Every structure is written in structure tokens, then in C-alpha cells.
Image 1: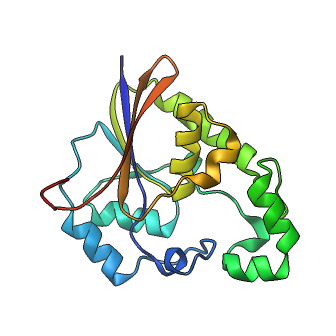
Image 2: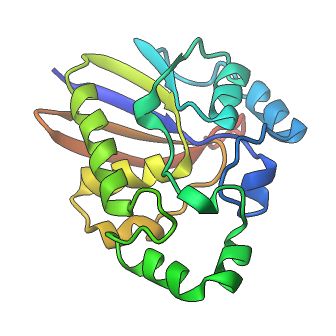
Length: 193
């Protein structure tokens, strides 16, 4: 039995544009409009999921998905950094940010470390692997990074080396705990996609 998982990053929000740790802000009007413009381009799925963040739920809705909220797909818990920009945190706590970006076990913000987060997402992926058919999930970019790291057997240090633009789809297929990756693609109506 082969499972297929398509992970879609949320449309543009102010937090994404400002490189701000998500604080529950909604999609920008343009991001929601772009998601609505590509509704219907996704292949049929046996189930649709969304991370609990507002921008993920709103993107799923704009894409026309009747998605169930999946708390296990919540983004990386950044503790006391939530709502602050990376520039603000870097200026106030340069050593903490450097340590966090270089050591997957570090959690200077009081939230999850990248290692803990990847472990949580790995558990979700293992549970999803028993679902026969296709799952479409709208998730935070860091969820896409964690699944990619685990699917490829890459070191956790590779987590920050994966770029996930808004409204991109990355597909994973697998069985028996072995996953393959189809590299990401933008969701759009251009003829070459």
C-alpha cells in the first residue's frame, strides 16, 4: 500500500512577509486571492488536513479544501519569540539565535528545539503512512522542512537549508516507512506547471 502526502505551504501573510514568528495573523488579501485563483488545481485526495494556524486554515479554505484541523501539524513552538521578527530577536539575542540556527537541540526561546519538532512531525508522518491514498495538508513551512529532512534521512542541521515559498506543494510517497520526495512546485495556472 502506497501513501501519498501533498504538503502545501500557506499563502502570503504579514508574518511571512516580515520574517516574523507567527502570531496568528491572517492571510493578506492578495495571498487569499492567489489561493482562491488556484482552487481546484490539486489532485483529489482521500483526506484533507490543515495545521491549526490561522494562515493555514484560511489557505485551506481559499483552496476549496474541506480540511480537518490536525493539531499534530502545528508549527514549531518558538516560545517567547512568537510575534517578534527574526531581525528583532537577532538584535536582542544574537548568541541565542546563532545557537538555535546551528544546534538542532537548542531551544533558547523556551519552545521546541528543531530536534523535538522533527520528532513530533516524524510521529505524524508514521501515522499518516498507514493511510492508503492521498492526503493533502496545508502546513507551516517548517513542517515541510521537517518532513523533507526525515524523508530523505538528512541530518537535522539541514532543516534551515530548505526554502519553502508561499503556496508551494511538495509531494511525498511511500510505504513501510520509506518515503520518496517529489520536489516542490508553485500552485499556479501557468502552462509549464
